[in-house]
Each structure stands twice: as structure tokens, then as C-alpha cells.
Length: 168
Image (cartoon, rainbow, N blue to C red):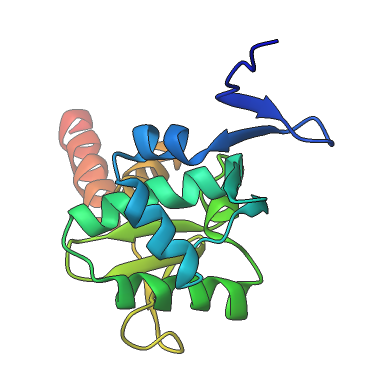
């Protein structure tokens, strides 16, 4: 009987798995690049014999790493980000990227920042202990538009003098 090639399968726990070829196509990186990242423990998939089997979380991490590499970030900087997330936040990159995550990665093309709380960002590549604080202009505009408007003293005095001038 002929063996059929499975490109996407399911692991024992029912989660979708991906072959190296799948991941290479998805992340637009070479098979050799995936092998090198595995050897350097950047992203280490499961091994079934000589084949690498990737979980969805690993595929997400690889696509982000590949994109950061294309944007000019060195692998050394990316590894610092991965280590910081693991050590300081107890999270993997894929957990940070989930839609319901409280953590967000932001980059300006020179550094990589982590928003770990609303209104607080940490520069992961420079000094993770010194956070930056954000002031959201749209929040301030929203607050201004939602607050009941009270007349200022000068407005109240002008309105009062107009009333007295009309009554005179």
C-alpha cells in the first residue's frame, strides 16, 4: 500500500500540528533556518524520529521571529525578548500574542517594547526595570467629552452681567 503524506495532522491531545515544510511556507523561511533555530534553542519543536513537529504556538512564534528578522532585528535581540518574556513574565511569545492577552509587543523598528499594564510600556532591549508611562490622548478627549460641563467663573460672571444689563 502507498503511504500518503500528511501535511497537517493532529497530535494525541487533538491540537493541530505542522511539519517543517508547512512552517517554512507559512513563515516564509527556509527549512535550514528552522533547523538552525531549533539547534540554537530559539524555537524547539517536538521530534518524531528525524522529523520536527510544530504546535500552533511554535508556528506563531516562528512567524513573529521571522517578521522581526525581516524588519532588521538581530536574533540576539529577539532572544533577549524571548528570555525576558519567559523569566520576568512567565509567558511564551505565543501567549503574549493571543487576542485576550494583557501583554502586547510594540516596536518602533529600533527597539521592542512590552505593554504589560494599561498605560505602562517596558523597553525590553534597554532597561526592563525602568518602565515608560503612557498618556493616551484619545482617553483624555473621551474624558473631556463625557464629563458634564460646568461654566467657568468668568463665563458665569459674564452671563450674570448680561442678565443684569438686560433687566436694567
